[in-house]
Amino acid sequence: MSSPLVAYESAGGGSRDDDPPPDGPSPAAPQGDPLAHLVAPATRGDRQAVDALLRAIAPRVLGVACRILGANSPEAEDVAQEALVAVCAGLPRFRGECSVVFYATRIAVRLALQTGRSNRARTRRELEAEAAEPIASSTPDEAASASKRRAALRALLELLPEDQAEALAMQVVIGMSLQEIADATGAPVNTIRSRIWLAKQATRARIERNPRYRELFR
Image (cartoon, rainbow, N blue to C red; front, top):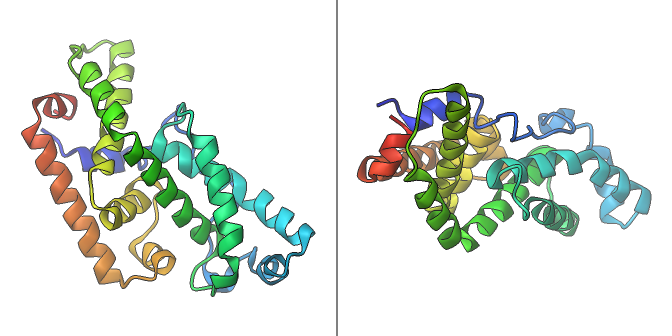
């Protein structure tokens, strides 16, 4: 059986046709952040600066929410809106340790994970029902199996401790490097590395213990 984490990463960090990638400006190093000049005036309440900042990060934030929750999730747009509000509210505390996009990405990841956790019981029941269906090898069934695997990985992500889920999601789902995650979270790189290692170990163990998960990721 191949590792589901390896399969997930090799397939582009969970991005598929029904999971649009986060759009908007590419995350940049703080010294080259194209949005940095908007932070100070936006913090002071400059309406034009706030609008420009939100327009720039909104596609990225929505894309992150869709990746964590699923492109068809009814909560994705609400999470994105909540994340944008949180970004604006947090600007006075933003010190430029990472790019504005990274800052917004972390907020969106955390809110999406929190939303997923609140729906965990429903998600797991639905997943068990779907996973019980036989998996065939024809092309349509392969597409259905891929969709089940993405749903299963989202459910598994929600079972992790918050800091581990956040770090794993930022690496595997969003595609950020260890250094980028460290910059965005304010944690040392070695701490991020440890969180991701623990998250992957726990996820693999859960898959091994669950026959339906093993069938999905065989």
